[in-house]
Amino acid sequence: MMVKKKEFYCNLGVQTGYAEINPVLKAVRMPDGTVNSFCQFSLAIPGEKMSYTIFCVGELAQQCAEYVMPGDYVIAYGRTTCKRDGSGVCLEAVSVLDGGPAVDIEQAAEDELTGPLHITLRGSGFHNMKE
Image 1 (cartoon, rainbow, N blue to C red):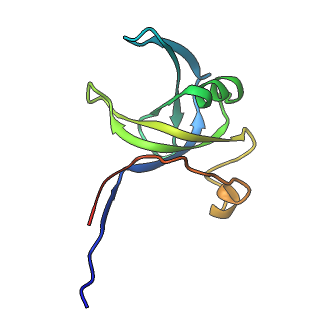
Image 2 (image 1 turned 60 degrees about the vertical axis):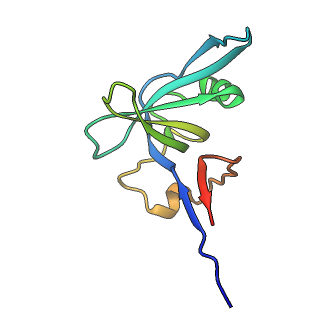
Image 3 (image 1 turned 60 degrees about the horizontal axis):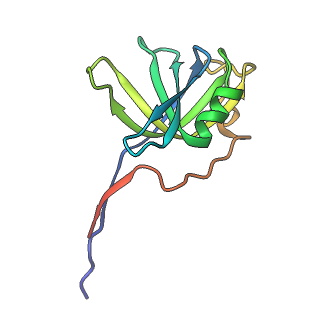
C-alpha cells in the first residue's frame, strides 16, 4: 500500500495587540472603474519595538472603521507580508476581533484572551497546496 504525502504551505498569521490609531477608511478606484474600500490601522504589541500595520478590505474594512477605537484589544487574522519599502511587517486581515479597552494582555491568562472570542475564517491565505 502506498501513502501519498501531502504538503501544505500556509502564510496565515495572527497579530494580537492594542489599536494605536482610529482605523482610516479609504477608497481606491480600480482600472475597470469600480471603487473598492480598504481600512488601515496599526497595532502596538507589548514587548515589540515596532507597530504592525493592519489592512482589511470590503465589509470588514467598514466594520473596523466603525468599531475599532484606539486602546482596544484586537486580534487580527490574515496573511502576513512585508511592506514594499521593507520597513516592517503588515497583515492583510480576513477577520478582526475587537475585545474592547478592558483587556490587559500582559496580565491576562491565555484563555482569558481567546476564550470568549470565536472566529470563522473565510478561505484565507492558504496557497501552494500539492500532493
